[in-house]
Image (cartoon, rainbow, N blue to C red; front, side, top):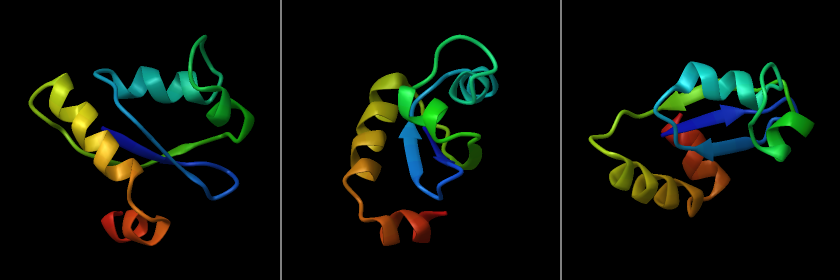
Length: 76
């Protein structure tokens, strides 16, 4: 689970098992990545959590997405 800080200072939350590759996708270096981050890139890794499995990662992603911006900034 990770949080990216985009060029417009927004935060983007996601899940990946290959974070380096995923960040390159988000920044448009290789195919893939979210449309939002490609449009608001470049993005830098601001926070990451390692969890035991994908299910746990998706639950944590949901928790973080429901946080306010201030709560996310406190997490960083």
